Amino acid sequence: MTEAFTLKGPSGSIAAELVFPTSFDRSRDHCTLVILMHGFLGSMKGAPMAFLSRVVLESGCAVLRFDFDGYGKSEGAQEDNTVPGMIEDAMVVWQYASSLPFVDRIVLLGHSQGGVVAAMLAGRLEKAGTSPAALVLLAPASVIKDYAKTGKFFLVRCNPANPPKYINAYGFRIGREYILSAQTLPLEEDASRFTGPVCLLQGTWDMIVPFGYGKRFASFYRNCRFHRIRATEHVFMFRRRKIRRLIIDFLKR
Image (cartoon, rainbow, N blue to C red; front, side, top):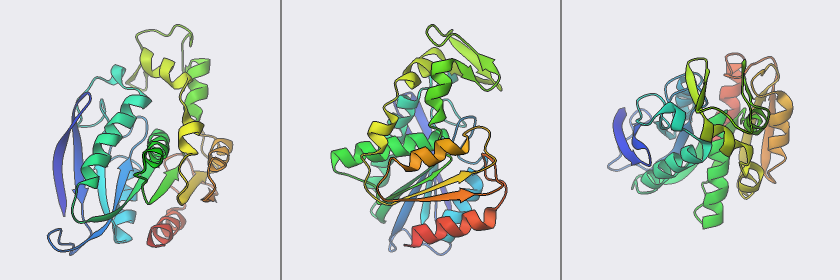
């Protein structure tokens, strides 16, 4: 069962969906809710989020997925999008999720850039005393800071000290403020505040977020299960049986 809705975000409406496990009755049942956060160039239904939604539902948890501003069906201009802005979007979604009467616990799950957002949000929530129950990260893109500092995004280059209004990467506009704000992103400072259980998966064939970045990200945490996924790439198209098992086992614990 899927319920589509919108939330009022800082840059306009945020498109979102609640998806429930089979036979779940929100009027009488309770469950863990997993908030999914997609990556750069992604959407709530793109790769690998559709696969991850199915995995979460199979674990018995409900899914709350959404498009960040400037992505998918959400409002906002692409070139105005920033990681701090996406954290604000995610906070709006968190506040909505926290108000749902059938939710016992909330888990944050992020892929790539969404992993950075999920990790930073979890740390900020813990500092505020409203920590999520757990965190699942797939190829969290801490490489964003290095991209911004060098001015190199995929095959596109710019002057990092004085970037243009936006650069065009694979048809997506990366704005000046995105580049400048990413250079000083307090990623480790925020992420390391989270003390709950973390499951982090990183593919050895990942050319977008190289393996070493994932391994270093895991070192931010005191309670992290780091999984090296052999022979899979950034959107985890391969070894899905293993990925499914690891995530389901973690959520059920």
